[in-house]
Length: 171
Image (cartoon, rainbow, N blue to C red; front, side, top):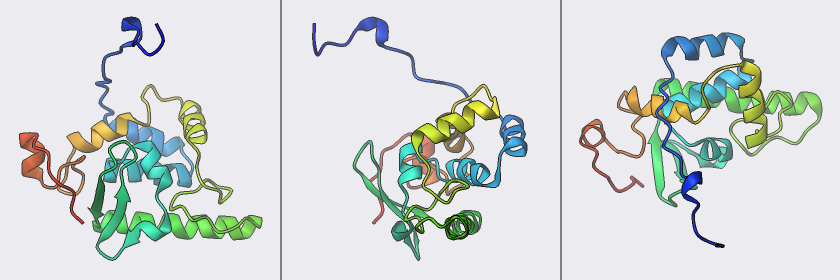
């Protein structure tokens, strides 16, 4: 019947953990703009849609401000030196590519080699061409598992991450 879930369509959540070696192998094959995207996913733990939607206007002195697309929760991802360097480099590379090719300067933080913003389809295409046996989404699990105080999924501190507590976003 319309509106009811088909039990055969229910799937188990993915439990794929991307090893550091697998990620390094993908990095060696990837172009710089793809490396930026993969590394940003690892450092932030953001969902793919949220990462692609990040705008330059979301960058603040204390970190990256965003409203999560799935939950609607506002949060700030604090800057780490690595994340700050990565984002600054991505914005600069995107601007240079857009100017070189005569495209408008992208409002998004991450853009492809043409200087145009990434699309979900383009990321999926790149992942297929990298020929890896993991999905972009699996980097979110790796980020949470490899938590290093600034990569904590939706948790605000390492302690709440380890206890599995939900916390209010920091704004």
